[in-house]
Length: 177
Image: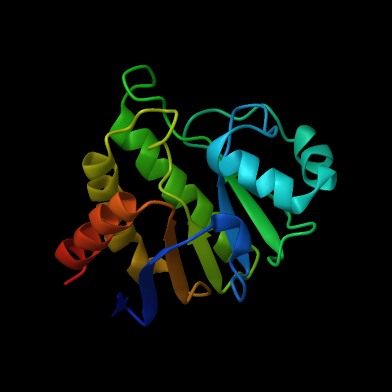
């Protein structure tokens, strides 16, 4: 299921963020030190190989809401955009910081002439952001940004579990209808 708004295709798929063929940049739900971790960060780092951690190390640390960009290394993507999402209940205001992740990642994509970006559900794993709330913030933010994008023509949300996919798909349909 997907929607096209302002000439930009927005879609949700169930899958693995580290194996997104045909997408120019994938987004890493990073930790502050941009090191290999669990969840999304672990999957991306394992697939990209040790060069990703070596390149990203000099960009660390980053703060919640910030985004930085590196090469894709062994991934099928040219770039990895690393975003540090907020830890729910700790990094305040969570909603603003989560929205900044999406805005900053898409701004970097625009600056690098990236035509397609794949996002995970930032902050919803170990960082504890409630899935429904995160999906709402995500798509409200995307809705506001879409008219400003000139280079990005495709935004994909890659959800690992059935539940994550269903929640994000419903939020996409509700928000971008």
